Image (tube, rainbow, N blue to C red; front, side, top):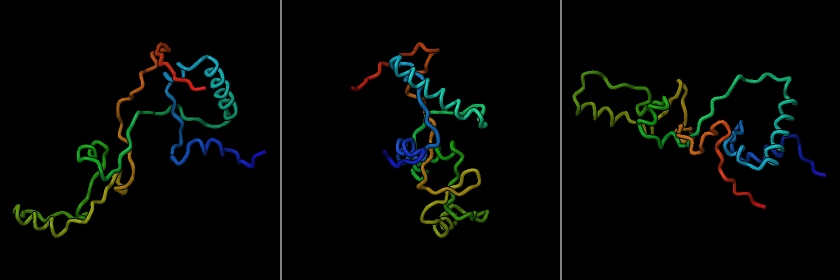
Length: 153
């Protein structure tokens, strides 16, 4: 008999990720053998019934993404994600400076590294952020998509 606590197995399965959700490709699921599909459907029905008393969201928005450090993003990627970069600790140069004076002002006021902001909150340049990308797994096509699984014994 093990001394595991409720949730231990799922927590271990998620490993060190910070994921709060498990997202599965429908195309993969419908391509698995019928016995697997029936076991999964039975488990999903059991889960649904066990939490029928709790409030659930109407839906979720799920999209494929890649993870990158904020400090490694290009200016265009930062702009697309609504992240601003502040090299001058909130200071702005005085108006009317010549290009030479502006360059001197920048050199005198530039920080060692930028501060990043998203939605008004400061974020760390080492933080990971998800960038949406096209999903490489084919759409389920109303049950018609089949991707041959490579099942191991």
